[in-house]
Length: 454
Image (tube, rainbow, N blue to C red; front, side, top):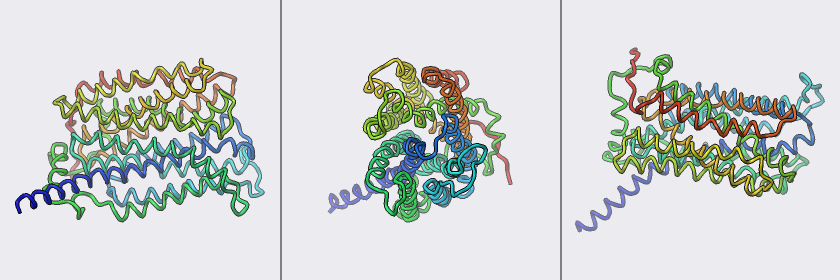
């Protein structure tokens, strides 16, 4: 009887523990859709260009419209998550961005004249990209709050690795989804590239049903025992010590450690957004291949990025469990990730598509290993009630960096330069960011923050 009771108890404990990882997968699914949605335009641009011609500078303007809105809303989205709560906030932003991605399929001239020299359809696409950025800007702040709510400190980098792995799954799915939709739709006389956006929007709305039915904070989730609930909540107590009250953005910015994390994200996300927005165009132009051929290999770097998410977060968690400090475990993993990035500089000197894809895969692996660790730093440094705000600041800086580098690349390309300068710049940024973190954050630990009461 005792043995049977023990077995039942062990099974129940295992089920409750697995609930945390189910929650991580739920948040990861949202990030899958986020990266699927933002990749639909880069992979369909060649079809859109055939109907509405545009320059590289206009292509960069599409990216910038998304990134500027994404960065600003990333900042606002973090603030919103801290006030609405994770459950309600994540639901609202997913509905918004799903409708925004679907709206790109409606872009037409509608018999209207050009606006500032651009076909009206292109202006509509730019507006839709801006709205998509507004919606998606709350995604990672919400995901960071999920980690802060549900996971003790020694599991957070692994959990963030799973969630961040959604970036790879979404980006891998994008070229295959586009391949299938473009080759097997055209229903009702609507161009296949438009169906790509409609299908993506519907997938996002379906996720909102799953989220509404399954997500609750651990304080309210009916699937947790009191013991398991206590284990989860105990991981937050060190950071939550002290009087209750708000932590202002000005207070966060008064610490050099915050500026260092924000600066590191500014540099390294510039490289990341260049890779994800320009890789399809780089492959098509550098190796003179068609869209169908590009989609057959274009998913490989994104698959490598997914492995990087898991390896970076998993390595840091393993080092923690072996007794290494939070500071050392995070920095060893960050340094190893940064060391993989400079090799991408060699990609333009190659005449082999396979080797170029390999070098981009190495860069994507290193970048997402790095990104997983940087996104977990807010949970190591500040209380949960301000995690969304800090994560929003970090994401805003990254988006601004991406917009600036993208505009620079477009300026160079429209003036006849190769991709070499862009790859040299992007391949250097992670190493510079790692040095910044080492110098400005000598020890990763909870910050002494002033609380604003009332």
